[in-house]
Image 1 (tube, one colour):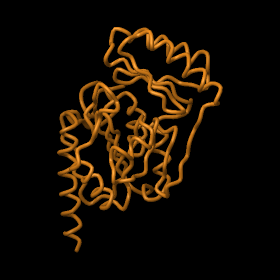
Image 2 (cartoon, rainbow, N blue to C red; image 1 turned 135 degrees about the horizontal axis):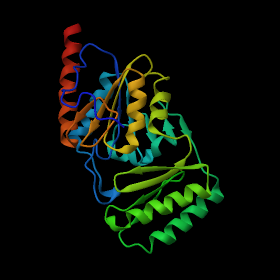
Image 3 (cartoon, rainbow, N blue to C red; image 1 turned 45 degrees about the vertical axis):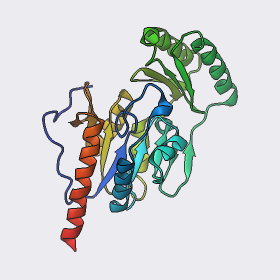
Image 4 (cartoon, one colour; image 1 turned 120 degrees about the horizontal axis):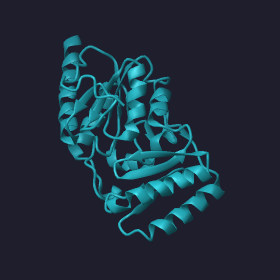
Length: 259
């Protein structure tokens, strides 16, 4: 990864263009918490997402490591197109679900073995996502190396899996699944096709999303510090909220100007 290209630049004006918006959730729309179930998105931010969806005729999608059911709960009452579990499950704008799964025997074996191991490491957490597993160590950073070794061992034993590191978490997911592929799939479908993609994310899991958007001559935005392929940067989650609010004002002004 290279440093952000326009790290000292403000985000470009989106006035006058047709854009499609893709948002990560944890660390982007919501502040990261020690427990995944403690995460929430303020009501005003959810309202702004609904407004953005209305103004873009539905060209707003969530692209997250969380399952779609959790994403729906976090942004309710909005039910947007979504890629959950890094794209292993994807709901398009028509409501159709596209899902990658693991064979039942592998999923059951992995869950049993991973849970038994993490039970021995206080503060760690196994999050079961159906077709993927997240091994959290935010509350037990001393187990980082052991968690990584455990994940590498699982990938070696089951080649259909791949490893995805993140912030104090490592995930095991099916091969060929990532946020970049999810964005590319959305961009081939209505209402996203023909628009300029904008992707906002904060983690290593978002880098393939940035790469896909860059290849499409779109706008990639990294939230927070760290090396990235993104071309622009916002300081933190609150900066994302502020940018979203200003974006709505701009888009609404454009609409009034055309009337």
